[in-house]
Image (tube, rainbow, N blue to C red; front, side, top):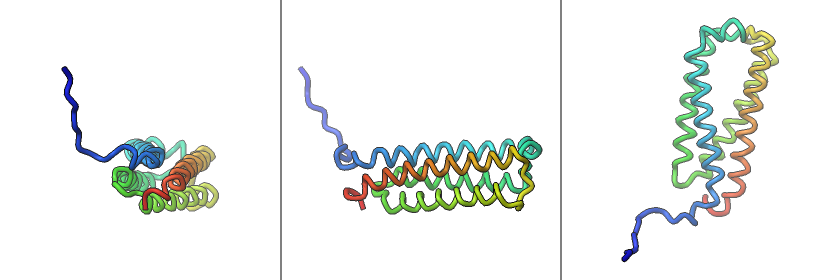
Length: 143
């Protein structure tokens, strides 16, 4: 004999449109944390091949860990559209900043360091795009 099992929680249908947006935010948060750890732990070893001084690498790594925490919190929040919009704007600004750093001699980057910044800008732009698309799809159901 089987008996019905009752569970308490949010109905899946209520948040189904947010699935891709939450996934994009979670993956962005995880990859941002991973990259921040690489910048922090690898700062001395990245200095020569990239031309990224430790004095720049460490604050970037710390900022990325903070950004990762924010993205993870946003992804878990019950109503995320406004917060996800801030994540899209933050990613767009990060992309622009990375491109500026790659093109302007503020930091003594090597050719590999400039390529590293451009690839980072592309990665951030891709996350911004996925989050933007997820946001557009979820906007009518969650404000």
